[in-house]
Length: 385
Image (cartoon, rainbow, N blue to C red):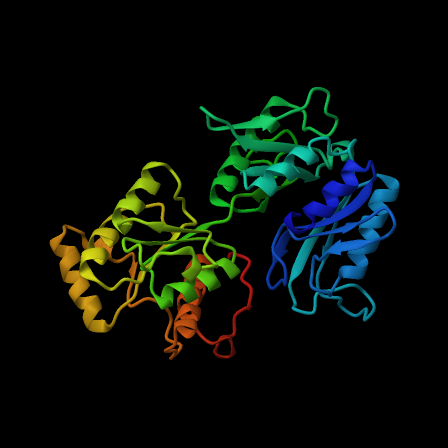
């Protein structure tokens, strides 16, 4: 829904009713992730995509019908079987698409959600997509972190779109909070009244978390390339170096911020302020012991970081390990270090090296092997990733 939020909010503010189809679950290979959406506007306009083309026409009609009738629908698209005209995914996987009417009446809090997304504030939307009682389908709960507390559901007085029942609200608030903290969107199953071990109710939780952070230490030419590809992948990139002559915004236009500070000091300050999370990646490109050792000593002891990589030759790597052991790091802590950084792509230039680093980060994040796809016989897109 993030990619269609601007148009969706504009139609909402204009008082229009539109249809929206959203991928809520995938099994096997799928071109889009849960949360991918298509919106059908009041004049039949189509914005967004749910499959990259495979079932777009079917989802368009499904969403348009939901807007016209006000009746939500959950439809599974997979292989077409023997019908060559049936909508299907050519990649062989299956997707569940939930279509519903969206308006100021059916989603009263959409404008606030849109403002949060635009401002980069974390917010999650939990939508009941399947339930034995059809009148419950389509009800939503918005969950936000609140100052001075953990998470709190946002329930407008008399909001007909909000789930009813304390157990359902409490369960969805707890689970949506955890998914939002991890930046994940997924479909959850419960009993009809929110029982965790039951069946009958499915809820899609879409997390609109701020972009994950990439901290690049070392204001060198390789850092400029890593910043570019990190930004392209959706990270909020910070380049940090203690040398003001090199750490300038002009040299790193792709970075969200350029900080002049000792890397280890900046890293510790960000950790103490709670600005790092389980999606944060760290790339140490200085390959200078006076920067590397104190920075890596702190990074490898921060359990929440998703990835810690350090650039350098094999000899630099071995020397660095010895210095880190002398600094007191354990073998378990050192096992978290990706060094020499990147996958074996054979690249040499800063841009090629940046691709290698980015590929390793993606593989670490998704559980990929880094092997060539042609040499594997498993699905390209694993449902467990």
